[in-house]
Image (cartoon, rainbow, N blue to C red; front, side, top):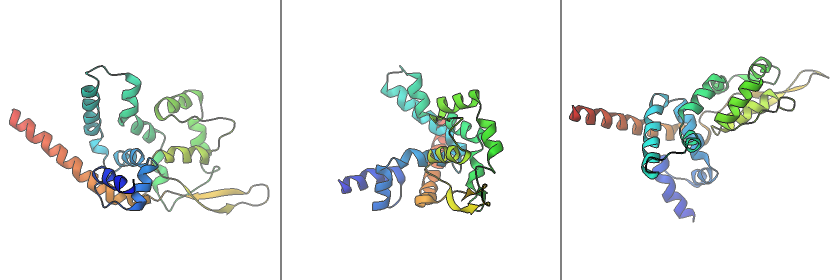
Length: 200
């Protein structure tokens, strides 16, 4: 089965398949890396990617699409939501965060309308009385296979709190994978442009 994992992972990632990558793939990292890629370095190609996905869905369903299934597969809406939520603030590995420092951010998203939209688009439930800013940030980042790293405690007696550093954006060696995916998207774009030139 390990050999099968290597074979199936190779075309997806485009890099040498290591046991670590196979394990990551088994844990569902592909969709998370895709979301991270199209949110960041591949952002200009997200509509191109969604069109390919939509074409494939249309082909497989004979044009009879179920809207909830479409929304789950397409990336543009999720990426737009993550950007509106300010997810990129956590991408600075030198920055520090705590629930105290994120209190205004948390207050801005912790209202009934925004919570409902986050649930609908990202399938994340925010519990207004139980959740902390760090807890919500970690769940949002988990969609990308990322996390804030605990650094130390701060504050004195009665005000002690945990401090976290921003994300490691190369977690799992993903930047090498992203470089391959970026090249693929550029080739897809060139092929589309060439076909349009031939058609005209």
